[in-house]
View 1: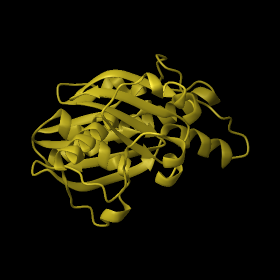
View 2: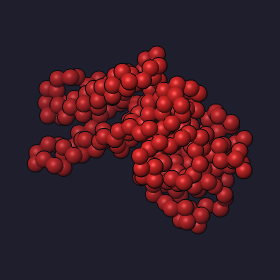
View 3: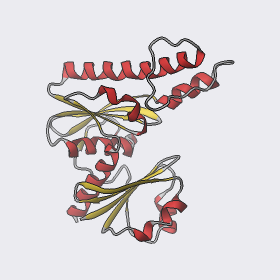
Length: 241
């Protein structure tokens, strides 16, 4: 089975071509128009689209192939025990399903480092119980810049070590944001480990590249976890027919 996975975010479109459970091609696009220029070169049987930007009706007008549009009502291979299941974001469900696709049993905590940081817990009974949401990396930088009179807009650069002691305003902002997130993640993991035995943790999302030092024998950095989750959801729905 060849599945095309399309994840349309606010700024980029991430795509992956799967053969069964394995990615054979992965690419990101700046716009839907850029993606449509290359769609004719892709050979696939089934497609799923997760989008925060376009409705299903809008995409049906733009795209000339059939696809499963991910909604809160789409069937998923886990039990949703969230207190308000209709408000649970589809990206959070996809991350949880992706974690289960990676690890077939046990307690799982997926941490998605995107615009917001989401913590999503799936127990050993395959029940999604919820988690937490906090500001993401760029959101923290932007908040300090926009909500103060003098602080500049800082950012992190890949492969650059961030010292705990910032010796100027910019490095102080970088230290506060980076180590604030790092300590937050470590604190959440420690708290979950106290409550749930044999916990495996999967860190994903666009900003996971800044936190690869967290990798340990039970902590894994898998940036494209949501794509794996979307592929599992698509396969689950195709097989139900």
